[in-house]
Length: 86
Length: 86
Length: 151
Length: 151
Image (tube, rainbow over all chains, first blue to last red; front, side, top):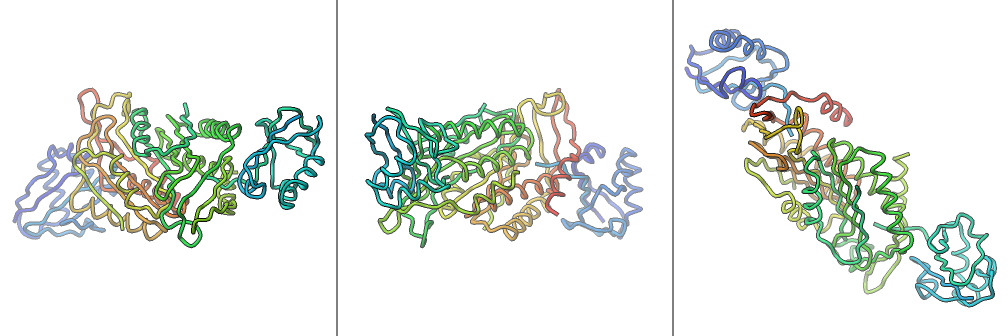
């Protein structure tokens, strides 16, 4: 399956890109996703994404418990650091 | 001597004019002024002007104790009812 | 620093606000209040015209004093206070206050304070024309409550 | 009732405010906040450009939600919220909020509340260019204090 990852704000800098495609087996969970990030990106990315200050949105919907997500083919997962707008 | 009286706001309606010239002997005081208003205008004008809500300005300066004013030739005395601006 | 004007003819609030904004490129935020003659305003929703009278020796000097207080109380990059006198028709601007500041809170508070004091303490007297008749307006209790907020 | 827009190109605040004012002749007062890229802003007073990024699925829907809250909380004749995304240069407008109301207090409070929430809760991420380098901006403690005022 293919999943789109979106990195907002400072996470874009840590990831080196604003979005990426991830190919993985169906039903990818949070721990496996963090492992993927650790393997393919700067170590600080997975650490930051795992922290309480980074929220996630799955297909445009905020997820209260990001540890419980399970990704399916075609999903878009956005990593949202604290906002600093306006 | 001649003194200019200026009637602001609703006092203009009571006086029937926005300003008037008053000819009188030098050193006209507050009581004599009220007597003049009573004689020449609607009775309500002198009553209203005597009330605490009406302030006076003598030659553009607000007077704290209007009862103590003494008018001299060329003076301009303005009667200022409560403001209702903006 | 403050631009304080008492006008006896109509003015263009958008043009004034543009010029004010352009004059303060260092300000991060600009808060403005525009008061206009309401369409359908007045007693019975039939206000045909509004007139503000002022008294030359007092009105503008007091507006300048107020602007000075506002500039002393908040950290502003600029302050503009424009007030009409004379006869105005519905939708015509009456008053425009704008405060430019680095910090948003200062700009909001300065504009709010200036309006409360302009409304309740400025030397203006208002009358409305309705059904062809002019009627003087008494001060509103709300204006005194508004000004009391500032201690 | 609310006019809420997320724009990716420059806009003219004066023209927007004129149109908003003209659309609300029944409102006695209009309060606006304009936020612009400060000249001499940023770390060391050398901000060359500012960029706001947004996330399409969240940003505009959340702005609309906020506008709905504001309209429910105060008695308004109209509300306008315009926010930029993308790269902006010094003196370019970032955000314009305007609230039209019969009563001045409602217009001030609505614009103030909308700005506090836009600043601290909207889905925007900001970076500044200074000395040719882009740097992401962290949220400010002041923004959280501002929003806490509303309970």
